[in-house]
Length: 240
Ligand SMILES: Nc1ncnc2c1ncn2[C@@H]1O[C@H](COP(=O)(O)OP(=O)(O)O)[C@@H](O)[C@H]1O
Ligand SMILES: [Mg+2]
Image (tube, rainbow, N blue to C red; front, top):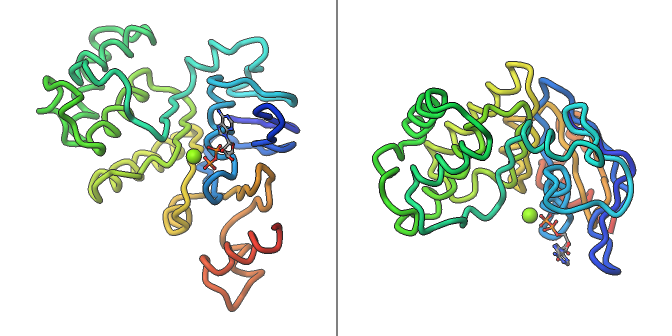
């Protein structure tokens, strides 16, 4: 679960996240939508403890980020929007490195790496250096590396960008499955169709502020004659 209460993040004088409050419950899959620069990545980095809030309260999996940042890190999988880390390592070396950090046993990591790498069709590439990987392959490896400790809560920043259609489908099925098992999935996208297919609810953010929270069906009901894309543009206009 994720709970934000009146969270603000400033970079010097600039307010990237502005008094933001929302909850994502266990068993939910919630889409985080907003135009470029609206504060999605900043929010996700706040949840994972990569950056610190300026004010407000952040609770993740019942831990307060002030008191238990490491417990939060151990209970989430955070997939960032830039899959370019440790490129000199081979895929398998990177996965083992991450598994070491999360203290995953040799047996568990072997089973999980094999399963996920085969699901994403990069098993045969694990012994090659990540420098030789395409963007999509790096993205797949980052995803696997963040599932290796079987985290309760998934935080995925534009996770399908750069993935081929089959892997994108595989990931979306995994996300649904994870939520169905009673876990939490919070992901950002600017592709409304993905949100429509996957989400129980969406949170729309613009200039660091929440401008909508609810189901896309409720939105469509409210703006009856409009397409999702038109509704989104209308919402942004209304809040600009
Ligand atoms: N490290 C930083 N220092 C200063 N400004 C930043 C930093 N990171 C992000 N920003 C600014 O904060 C705003 C929100 O960025 P971001 O959270 O990346 O948005 P999104 O992911 O929705 O595109 C943008 O205007 C961006 O330029
Ligand atoms: Mg972003």
